[in-house]
Length: 226
Image (cartoon, rainbow, N blue to C red):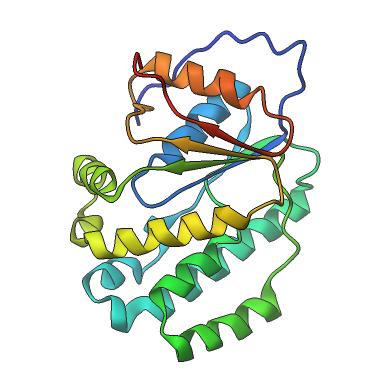
């Protein structure tokens, strides 16, 4: 795990969002940002667990034949995480997550054929629980070539077969989804040139910006000096 940034923030004059969700396509840096935010604000984390999905590696090798079990496993996993949160009372603890529950359908629409999606939708409609609304959603954007480079750099073996076509589809699906998203305050971040792994200045400026958001839709484009 990369080292955390130790920021000294004066938050006495502004309430912090109690539930932050970070979203974006594979390789964009959402889990890294979620962990940094949890460290900065002393929050609990709610993170995806892709390594627990026994179908994921098969999906990257053979998407057509492994898409449905891969997607159903993620649906069951995410729904169980939310059930566990309900038992802990999501409205009391403060948390940062690296996914929205709604993203499950987003991926399903990209990966499943029409018949598979119809079956998936039946399962989804029967099992989904009421999702807690974030106080802030951070959507990280980056072009496909940037995602491919980051996937290669982090070196997870199962991900090395991910192709540009699949990432293009995901990027398009995310853009369509967040074009209409209005369930929570939204910060759309151009993450192509952000180094959230090792550059504390990049991270600090992003945090300063997101703490200023109270409602509505906002955009963050790093200045050239970053």
